[in-house]
Amino acid sequence: MKIFKINGLVNNQWLAEWDSVKFDEHFRRKPQPHFYIFSIKASTLKRLSKVYPRTAEGNRIHDIGIQRKHDPERSSDIKKYVHGGFPWSELSSRQKENNDNDHLKMPGWLPTAIIANILSPGTTRGSEALEEHNSIGIKKVDNNLCELTLPEEIYEENWDPAIAPIEIIDGQHRLWAFDKDEEFDGDFEFPVIAFYDLDITWQAYLFYTINIKPKKINASLAFDLYPILRVQEWLEHSAEGNKVYKETRAQELTELLWSHNKSPWYKKINMLGDSKGGLVTQAAFIRSLLASFIKGNSNQSIGGLFGSKIETIEKDYVLNWNRPQQAAFLILIWSNLLKNISKTDNAWTKLLREENGQQNMEGIINDDPAFTSKYSLLSTDQGVRGVLHVYNDLCYINAKDLELDAFVWNDELKEDYIELKDVNKALDNFSESSVDKFIDNISKVITNFNWVTSSTPNLSETERKNQMVFKGSSGYKELRNQLLQELVKSDIVDVKKTAEKVVKILNY
Image 1 (tube, rainbow, N blue to C red):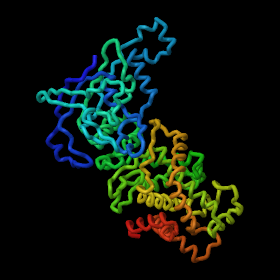
Image 2 (cartoon, one colour):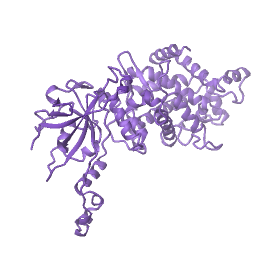
Image 3 (cartoon, rainbow, N blue to C red):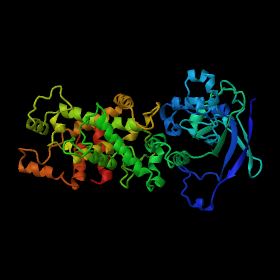
Image 4 (tube, one colour):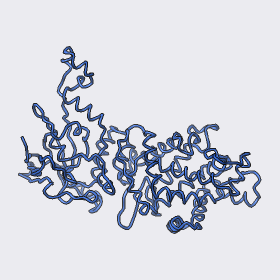
């Protein structure tokens, strides 16, 4: 039977003290003081919600990235459970054919509520808007009862609105276990708790408090599913929130730089902190990432590309990149830098190669002493921090022109680990774009910088003193400053102009 009207309950839930919460008409509107509770057939809910499979193109990704990626295996397990309960759902096909196992069949109840958001007519997601005739009408019958009216065309075979009237905040894998045209011998309805016209910021908040606060899923994954969580002030001050996320993400990215065979840092980071483990320590790399790519917005308006809002005249947004994309971007940076260094035959590279007894670099890249020598600043804490700073600074300021937000991820992500093939895919995407050229141009310029340490043999006293300024805690700022000055002198227009903007903002 086709149902077009659903009766529900209005659940009032608002305390007077919540009125003091900071609301924002454009970013985090004040929600309604109630939500709705109703029961609906699984197949109908799937039609209404559409459960975006994240195959969006272009700029739609900004707004449609609000739902958890679909794991078909997980939904398949739920479907098996629904039809036979536990432990029947875990039996093999052959075991199920054995009548002796019939006693293992149980009801496959899914009594927990789907959490949803009902969109108001005209709500936009990217370039699309929810049309009035595709929306859900809600009418209060009295204080605690309501009636929901579904779109008239919902059951037509070709009904496929660009924007579905319902967004699933939590429970999409339960929904994916059902087909939109599936019929049952009996009834299978979902209990639904639905908010109305809820900002994506609040949806992210609900997802976090439902799934992360009780430690149900990997916190790092949550910040990929809801990038906006990375910049929420309420999480900044939480011991379980942004600080932990950022430290965890920095460690994950460092480990990928160390473990990925396309990374110049492959097996070259000292992961254990011992004297024989590698060049720069894992801890130093983590600190440098936290100070650059993963830092939050600062008063200087240059935040971290992965950890803050990117501020433009038109709008502020959070870069919607996940872990594989972030790791690939870092590998791209270091690979471009190493490639250009290996092509360079200037005074500082010659000095380090000769000191290592290696002059002919033809065909040799990863073991270039200009990069790996103990006398190269690039293999020091200060050098790593300086490199990460300038690439982050220039890419952050130039994010709009580089169209960094156009890199869309449509594939499933694993919750508990990062697959190297995903990093490779992201690398391929970057390598075919203008981003790669910009990174390459920066690399060409900073290879002209003198990367030798003050302890390098055969330096003149003047050279030694010049390089001494990079030692100690003050050396971080000094190296960043001198690298930016080198970029400002460049005759590559986009690099020069962007570096000038960075220098002005940082007041260097």
